[in-house]
Every structure is written in structure tokens, then in C-alpha cells.
Image (cartoon, rainbow, N blue to C red; front, side):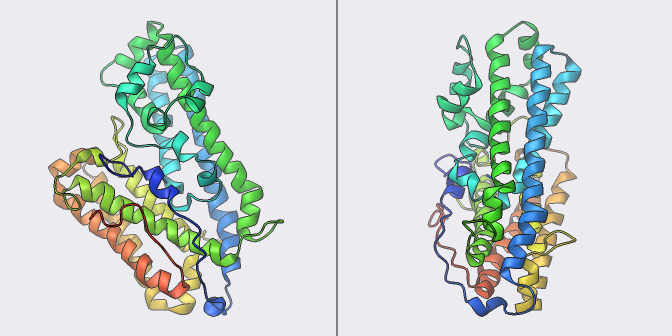
Length: 365
């Protein structure tokens, strides 16, 4: 990831609804040179594990930068901490296309990436005499934790952050440090599981090897639900397409203005598993054996979606602001992301024999 809403499921909730439905996959579907096991093994080793490791490393770097800021607050250290938040958030968004396995079993999204946050609860927590990482992890609600809660505090308007820290506001410093620690610990836990036991199982080795059919099915299901979430429950609601009234709060974006980068990383993450590493295999290798035309359509859809998102970057504005100033460009981007969903949900699932099931927003639009 990781759906944000007023009366909408949280992105975390949507991803938690992706169950292993026991897809009935024809064993003969990939009887040519490249097998599903080959692809699962290659993607685990060359894409998923390295991406989670990058996400964990950047989250740990963010935690370190924030501790340095709190210990000696200066304008330069505040900017460094904010930059580290952006990088860590970007890397976490990149892995949303393969947010499965230990990430969901350990409910890591509730610690790392929940939306919407409750700003009143976050502000109320600042009245506590002391805040530790254990407090945040064990007693705070999900809407008081994660990247978005940290964004609310770290990117406050004006010079409020620096002045509070320089004035010795212990609760403020403890809260931002604790949030960063909890995020870093949770992402590291997921990365270690992928590097260890779960990654071995997913790639087909170890004592509890996952069926190659189920492994590939999960790598298709998660992007289907992710594109549906982004297209319908975020952009669709914000544009007033999938709900009667446009609602910008559906976009998981605060003062850091990371919404466009989130979109880019989601689609790049889908591209990660579809194309695979340049030295390895991806789902594309399975599809091309079954239909070169379908493979090309999927490649084109991903390219078009990335190009559309990159065109939004040219505005140099937060996503919510672009929706207000240039809704047509955002609508075109939504159409491009929905095109990715359509190819995935029709041609790719059909060729691979994957059963998708239902997501939390079925019937909402």
C-alpha cells in the first residue's frame, strides 16, 4: 500500500478484506517454459523482499531524523525530518501492491497507514504528561497512529512545530518520536518476515510452502482491489463521480501534499510485480505465454496510468488542490487507473483462472 473516507472503508480495511479464497486455478494454464513457481520465486527474491527492505530502511532513517530533531530542534533538522517522512511514505506506498502475508496477518497497516485520522484525538493526546512508543502501539487507536498522524504533527502550518519543540514541549516531541518508532518497527517486522519464513513459503521453499497458484492469485488480487480503492473510493469520491457529493477528505493527504506521489507509487508497485525485475520474471511472463495481445494491453495500461499521474506532478500542487484547479486532469488519471483495473479484472484474472471475490466497496458506486 494502504481507503480513506467519510463513511468509507479505510485503505487498511480494504486490504484486510482480501482473503485467500482458494482460487481454482488450472494446473495446465502455464505449461510452457515459465511456471507460476518460477515467477513467485523470482518476484519474492528480486522485487518484494528488496522493496520491503527499502521501505524498512527509509522508515528507520525517518525515525532517526526525528529523534535528532527532537533532541536539538533547528530549521535544517526539521526540513531533514520532513524529507525523511516523504521518502519513507513513498517507499511504503510502493509496496501496497503486494501488501499481503505478514503485513495483513500482523495488522501492520493499523500501525503504519490508517486514514482518516482523528485530529481531535491526536491533539488531545498531546495533553498527556508522557507518551511512549508502547503507548502509541498498545493503547492509541489506529486513527492516532501511522504516517498520517505523524504528518499532522510534523507538517503543521507555520512555525508551530519548531517553536513547540524549542519551547520544550515534551509531549509533542515524545509523540512524534513515538509515532516514528512504531512505524519503523512495524515496517521492519514485515520486511523481516518477507526476508525470512514467509518469503520462503511464498517462493515455494521452506516447510510451509504456499501453493504457486495461490501465490500468483494474491499478486493479482491485491492490485485489483488497490486500483478499485484508488479509482472509486478515493479519486471517484473526491471528484463526485462515485458519490453524490464530491468529498476531498477521501484523498489520504495532509499538509505534506503527498497524494500525487502516492498514486505514482501504487501504480509503480503494480508494475513491479507485473513486469518483474529486469533480471527476473514477472506475471507478464505468464500472460505472454497465454496471450501476447493481453500482455501488451496490460503493459500499455500501466504506462498510460503512470504518464497520466506524472502529468499531475507538473502542477506542483497537492492532489487535493489539483482536484479543485484541474479536475479534468484528475478525471483522466482516474480513467487511466480504472483501465488498469479493467484489464486486470477481466483479461488477466481470466487467463490465470484467478477468483477475485468481493471488496468492501462493492455496491457503493
